[in-house]
Length: 399
Length: 84
Image (tube, rainbow over all chains, first blue to last red; front, top):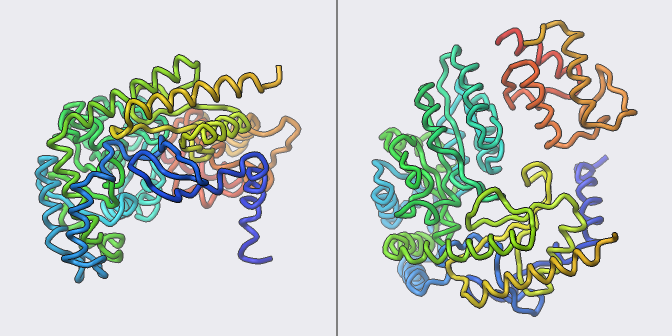
């Protein structure tokens, strides 16, 4: 028996997948042409599976800001925020995020994953309770597990189920934190936030909303679902990431609780990680500025989303429950999922292929995500590719 | 709410788990949920939801690493049922 024996099941699953979908393990972006196009396996590929919602990863001003910061401050901070890794840019970005969200406090973390790990493992401890939506991201589960709180999950977007649990837990008189996402990453559906806020207030719980996929996507100012729903002042903590709409990498938490600032001193994922490099901070600050001055980007994003969502419905694909820039096709059959995904690659379109257990309800997902950066011609090609693979895959199926 | 007798809970749980495994699969107290029944994490979560509904309890995820066998699960339900 070796330490690697436990990976045998994974090895067998991978071997099986290689036989029917060898491409899957060999996707390398050999050359990045733009925020929406790359060369894969020597061929041009439209990227319809990134989270580059506003197309800012190739924005000239963001790139210039990053280059300038690297020249002036170096390629990395080589230290923790708690030691030598807090540069003036980190502090400025925290101030700008607080202003953007109209909150008192903000903390910047090195990644979105770390933001959830840091917040959830630190905010809630022994004797306290976290109620999380079943479809929450792995970083939320991991953050909860890392802390000492009791963890309960409620059924996805089921406020009655959430309330039932709050009612059961009420007599314990413990602090309760509800955790949901603004836009769920797999099916692109929103949390029923107004109803969640209502039960949160009824039972005196706290609420943390992860706006990773909704920053820049929802709300008149791009602040996310809380803004769109008009309940921002009732949300205790907003967590988010710079690796989607802001085209970089990093995470944050904002709050009107002044005590948020104390989390820095108690959070191991904050203290024991190197801080974001100056170039990342600089491009993120520029992207945040652009997001606030370019509402047309959000409009283009939604126009593109609307176009693909309608096309997939017209083609009779089982799409997610509502329109959003995350447009998923749900499939029961693994082979069909592989065939469609491979067909799209052949057509020069990359989307994400996601397997259980990372998917809701054990289905297979072709997860597309559109960008404001997709041109009308690229959207044509994406829609055309889905049309072709639908026809060929359906006709190839045994009757 | 169901009663809190060990045998009653065991029968309920056996029935719930039974809908996730082949009909010929025997389920005993010492049946290992993963090694014997090959239940993946998604199925375990579904079973958890059904058990919560049947017994009107909330099961903390924290206890799951300690639940290896059907008996372990029954004892945890019994304890939570008593608490709630």
